[in-house]
Amino acid sequence: MSKNLLLENIISIDDFFTIPQRVIELEKNSLECQIPGSIYQFDEKYSVDSSLVNNPDNPDNYLARGIDNNNEMAIGKDNNIIYGKGISSALSIASASAEAEFIADYIVAANSQTTANAGVLALGINNVGKINTGRGNDIIFGVADASGNSTADSQAESILSNVTFTDATSSSVGAVNVVVDAVGINNDGKINTGKGDDVIIGFANASALGNATTNSQTQLLFSNGSTATANSESVVIVDSLALGINNTGVINTGEGHDVIIGLGTNSAVSEAVAAAFAYNAAILATGCDPEAIEALESAITQSTSLATAVSTTTTLGIINSGQILTSFGDDVIIGLANNQSSSNAQTISVAESAANDTATATADAQSLAIAQGSTVGIVNLGQINTGKGNDIVIGIAIDKSAAVAGADANAVSTVNNSDAQANTSTFSDTSQAIAIGIDNTGGKIFTAIGDDQVVGVGEIGILGGSLNTGLGNDQVIAYGSTIGVQDSEIRLGQGDDFFKAAIVDFDPVTGAISFPLDQSSSIKNTSAFGDRGNDTFEISNFEGNVLIDGGKDFDVLRLWGNLDNYQFTGSSDNRTLTIEDSDSGSVLTVKNIEAVYYGDSDQAYKISDFA
Image 1 (cartoon, rainbow, N blue to C red):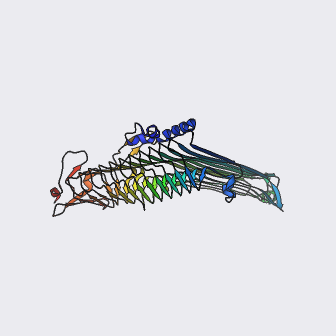
Image 2: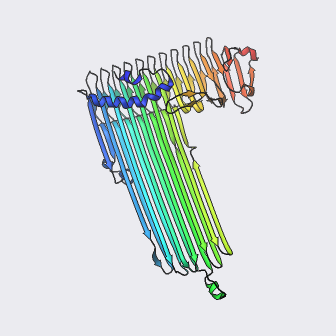
Image 3: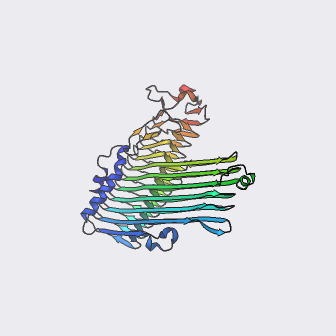
């Protein structure tokens, strides 16, 4: 029942992009059914006191847990559901304003400062004990929905007239901190689904929004020898986590055609706006009285605006540092991570001075916008073993990160002896945002017996670790927008296997995949081994040191890329071909390959042809 709903008509990689909608449909159907003997638990928290940020030791106000199991939870032999959902949300709004007041002789200030914090944590299912579903086509479904929204507004104003030798300042500061964590299933114990076509789903949705607006304004009218200063600063820090399944224990789906899905969706927005306006107009003397003109000779104006917006996101479908075992059956493990984050920092500074003799105006505007984080379909630090059956392991990561920084400064001084300086500084960065289909660094993936598929799609398709597809006609596909596969050891085992690493463009909505002309770095610092069987290796441009070893039987290498840059050298025993990229110095070593093809050509070459 559950397997058919999730996976029917899925025949290609782009079909897996429909999984989020299928998961939502399954959740809806699961709640409508309300099967007797099943378990449904909900927890919802709404906070306005930002407890996770201000008081992390008091989780009752910000933590929502659907199911919290530290003993043994079991359901019967029928087709049952264990469903836990945690919903946690927080809203924080802060505003402050200040007007001019004398704090000392000839010193006037308006200082406004405010802070808005929001922090939440949602867990669908938290298991440190045992969950057993026994026989039957069972569903374990953990859903976490966490959202935080903070807004800070700070206004400061100093407006004076007919003052002499006075320092007037307006200062506004707004700070926002948002922390949002959502985990669908957190398993530190054991989950056993036994016999049957079972489904385990962890679905985490996180949403974080932070906004700070500050405005400072200082005006001196008909002043004499005075200084007008306006300072404005906005700082917004947003940190958001969406994690479908976090497994530090053991997940064993037993016999049956089982499905494990970890789905993380994340949205983070940070916006900081700072504006500072300073205006100083001295009394403009007229006539021929030099003493009057000298007495009204100077006006100094300074304005400074600073805006910082930082969005940090962690979006993971599945992270495994324990064991995931699917045993017997045609099983599927899917990790999907979809992240959207943006940071926007905008500043404006205006300084204007007018005087008879000396007018100085300085305007500084600085803005910093950073969108950073990691988006990974499957992070494997432990062991994934799919056992017997025609199994699929697929990790898909989609990241849309944007950072915009803008600064505008305007300084004007009106007098013969004047000095006006306007300085702007902007910095925007998304370079620390990375999307990886499967990050297997430090982990092991073993698909054992069966015609298995391992697929990674992201900016980097597959990264690191050891991957062994065992016995069967297996496929390993690494599709990346920047690198297909990197720092990996891939062993295809026995069978007629297929390995492909390529640079792709893919539509994050439909999942449609195309292959651009630029195929730089499809494979980097990676070794791929065949064994017994007629294996096919298909790669494009390579980077670093790459090894392709076909093993025994008749194996094929299909090489794409800019062949004009390659230098081919065959060994005297006709078993090894060395290909060097003359531009990068990268080296591809090819062993035990019986046929080499260039691109889509039908012309086959032997290693001996390069001797």
